[in-house]
Image (cartoon, rainbow, N blue to C red; front, side):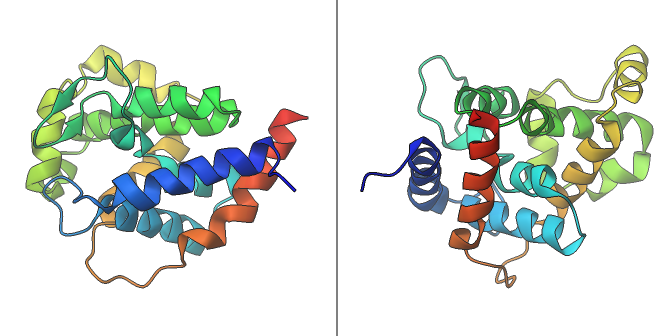
Length: 191
């Protein structure tokens, strides 16, 4: 029996993560799929809900896309990977909340570098380099708008996992352990 639409989408995502995701994660000591799995594990371990776990797993999917028109930088990948990833996931039937969280994880980094000086000091060299290409720290006006975002706290949690999920050899659940979660989410979204 051929897979249903949700299964086919998850198969595509897993193929993308298992192939393109094997590349190094831009100046970090892990691959892109290792980073994705570490972030998802951190979300699971914190007791996060389904959409947060999915957003943690797929937040950097935009780096793995081969679409025309994406701005790439040799050392840091797709510049607007957050927006590209959000579009990609929304187009495949993921919830608006998952897409908004994926689309907001760079925004959260920009906010934190404006409002928390010690946060900037903890960024890896690769993360500092990408910050410049992503617009740098927010202005006071941009930060005020972000503070009014109803997803602000979740975007900041996702950002925290994004910064932490860069440890070589960290034990995590395999990609396959997320299959049913993703299919279930997509089935609800498609009905």
